[in-house]
Image (tube, rainbow, N blue to C red; front, top):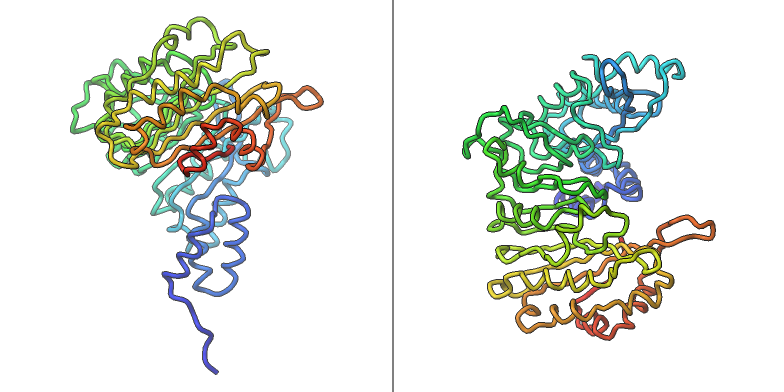
Length: 446
């Protein structure tokens, strides 16, 4: 009997690579495919374990600081057991993500299992994370799952900081957003590092000036506190100071995560990387509802100058809109503000269809979304996009919305809007409708 036909490995890889292994449905599909035969099993396992997330509990100690712990609810010790029983998966892991579960319960309230694992926390050499990393020969990235529970790097227990610091020189990608105030010294000698995600850095004024040849040449940078309005943090000084370990002259992607990054900080950061930057993502808005007066001067009457970004391919601007009943500010002017920022781009030197532009808007407390969105003053933005010099340079424009309102209980919740409904709402504006029908503009939610 002839053996069953088999597909070439290249075809099997293309099939499995089309599956998103980061979502539950995709992982279930990969797990099902892996049972088909040995070849698919190996290929699927490579994708399943390419990006691994493990979790720990964070516990605060007055003497030692913040300690990471294993317990029955965490997965760090379970993944270590898996590496021991199935060593063939070790080379598959390229990125390791740590999900830090907050738990500040008192030790006497822990179960017997928790007490067992607590004896092997990050303040001891036997902590599972310290045994996991050396077993991953192809590890490229270490990340932390984003959360609004930030804890200063200095508050971490000493051995924990030591191990994290010793791992960094071997990585190409590092995301430690959850630990603000990372010290400059942590990045000395990290020549492999290309992608960095941090909330804030700690400038050590005792550090010696760093020569340009010895600096970390980043390709991707995200800086700031995602989703928060920290305000006037001195972002550019972290990268422009003579003691800074970073060189942004080859940066290709920049994300400024803070909701209220002053215009001066945006301009200063762009000056460090304008000639190589291809992707830019930042927040821009005039609305100051709920924000103290110290934020006003950087915004009123100013727009960032994007005129040096000759190689820009992807621009994402994020903003928020507020219903008038909740704010004394005319947030409608944000669209004029954003349109003025777009006008500063060097369209005269852009190539045809060079720029992909995305505008993400969080919309809060509009009395009637159905009538309000389409009636916003889109004219200024549409005028820019239809300009004879601008239009040929645009590869596509995405308008993405996240709608928030009150439910019957009076709670602020995210409102899901089907694409068909969103299209009907925005098509009430004839300018938007015409751009969409020309396949220049698309709508969506996030």
